[in-house]
Image (cartoon, rainbow over all chains, first blue to last red):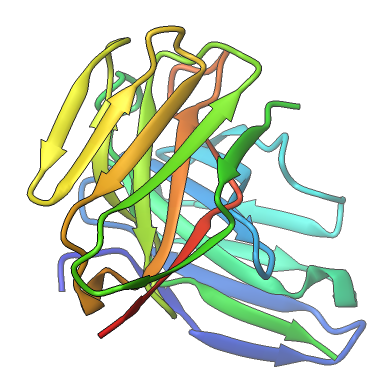
Length: 116
Length: 113
């Protein structure tokens, strides 16, 4: 499979637990994005990586959210002390370039997080 | 923040009918995108528009980039059951060069055979 993969596909957490969501981008893609999609809404930007550098984290909703991409490939989104409002689908997307108007983002299937 | 207003919220149509949905913004954008999302999957790009006034087709899909750069529409002709899904408009957020996207709320399309 040459597409973006995410794991786990589904995660149920008790309120207060920490969770880690993984994204494997398309090989060779420099840019990596995380989006949060609440039920019935469009995806909303969380954070952006160019290789291993996190250049934009303006969309992270609180300091409980942390993302990393230490080797410029796989990325992990970590949520500490999960709350019910964190329940959503977390989408990862990657793109080949770092700029340019035709820099298409390819999305993974998402991880559906449910916080009880 | 930037907001896209997408309408209608949902549509229920018969197979074979044509569909039209649109997206408006109070701000100007230089790139408009249309995505489709199937249940349990991520969005997939259908059509990308880069020039005001541009009309672009992809099979039975046609999209236009409004001349004011504040709106776009997507038409689907002769709908079929596999057109079912959620359609999103999106723009490349202003002030960034790396392509951060802002999405509309989505149009849920149901096609009755």
